[in-house]
Image 1 (cartoon, rainbow, N blue to C red):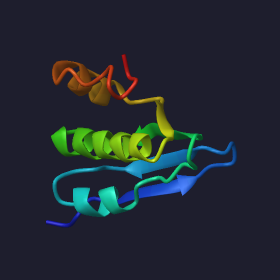
Image 2: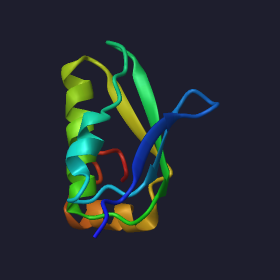
Image 3: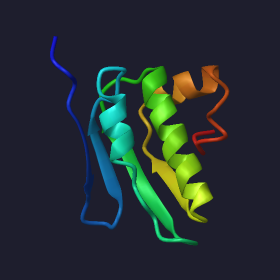
Length: 100
């Protein structure tokens, strides 16, 4: 079984775009791609092209948000797919991630 592809790239509007899938098989690699907003700054991450979502996806997004907060910055997640929104709501972390 191959590891799902996940990429995080800058788009033309100044945001980052997440594509592919974050799963248990590649969560460590996705975590290592953590966006680094400047202190006091904000960074937008477009999740619209993510394929599927599971608890590993949520864990990576929570870790990214926590790291940004520790650095005095913030991440804003845009266009979260319905499956990810539903899972975040079920796990009661939709507000934490700004998906509410």
